[in-house]
Image (tube, rainbow, N blue to C red; front, side):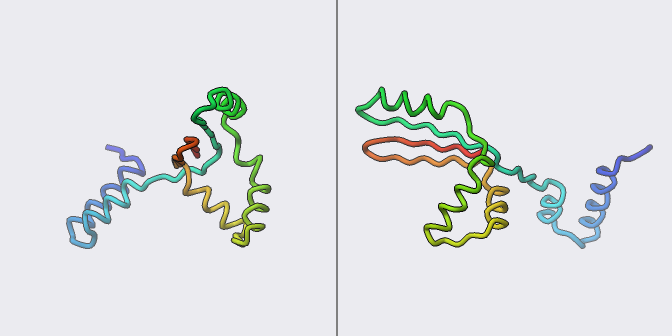
Length: 117
């Protein structure tokens, strides 16, 4: 019987559990690591109470998702102008962890949803 590389790794991890060298929780973390996906797009949906036409106009402008790459340099300038002083490498690392994030802003005047994927 020929085992694939993944199956051989699983067998080694199971042997380490049997010998007591590895806890089941640590083995689970090794076997089923969450794969991070870099955030690439941003989508905005806005609904302004008492102004349905304005809401429709804004949502028409933001109908398609925007690539983050288009606004990276602009975002970095804005962030650094506010005094946060985040370097570009740190910003890129933040994008690695932000995929799948949904931000909801609820106010009396408007409801804003921002999707990062």
